Image 1 (cartoon, rainbow, N blue to C red):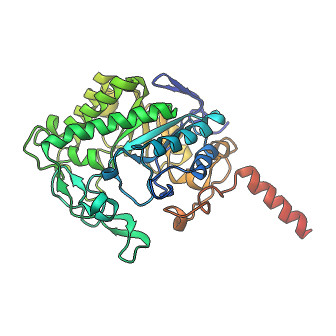
Image 2 (image 1 turned 90 degrees about the vertical axis):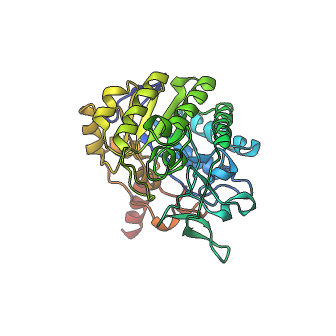
Image 3 (image 1 turned 180 degrees about the horizontal axis):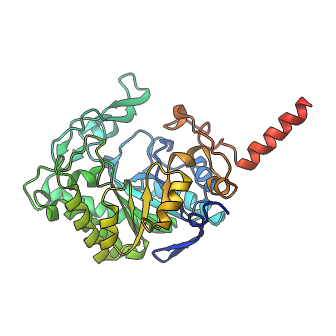
Length: 370
């Protein structure tokens, strides 16, 4: 069998997964409006991809102010919780395993996405220059607009942010998710606290490495205390320079975090880039999920080298709902339609054919032409 190591079973936390192919979180912007509720179509979308060893959902905002895009799903209301319960149930019905990603966009948002047109919140009043978010445009139609000027969080507000993650974790547990992933990557709120360029605070949450990662540690400890550390993962991107992120101490903060996450005993860390992965692995004793633009061959080799225990694939899962079966058959992969990734309905979402569907269609066409 090709990619034998990639397709072998592994234990993440206390969860045994049948292969090491992880579906990375992919923002699709198709939640029902109003209310940002996951739909039956979303349940079908994730169930189609249940062959992954572990699915990590698109980011689910932990509060209305944490929303980073139009029609992005939340996990902070009863209706949203019920929608996610349908998603988890649909995946489990196909013997899949699924984690929900808890997220807060911070400055990666816009007033038009905020209640009452309030500015987005952030560690400091530092705008994300050159960054666009999926939001209503001037004419009201969905599209990409420049991220708005944020307001800095007051020190007294930060405890409330931690509680939002705890409440979301309770909701995720009731909804039936196997695991929870806390997003501290790719320029979102928790990454904004970690990075020197976006955190100019002078209180207990700014300045030193320990202070800048404090909110992440507090959230992880709080969530682990209510659902168990073995059910918690954290996503980090220490070398990420997109989203106008600058971090002069990326290595120091990521390795300090590695030690703290090892102390808490979480199940895994999902590294969205390969920076410092070897040093990180020397410190963190849980599972490592690597993520990048890996081919299956590259992913298999990374696991064989001991770099990672599993590898996450993003865009490959958009157009290949049966990605694992295609890898087993060493079959070619379909390419996604970029125009239908963000927003819309079933087109470009649940209508991508499986390998079996594609082959049957090809055979039918050949028979008709003969």
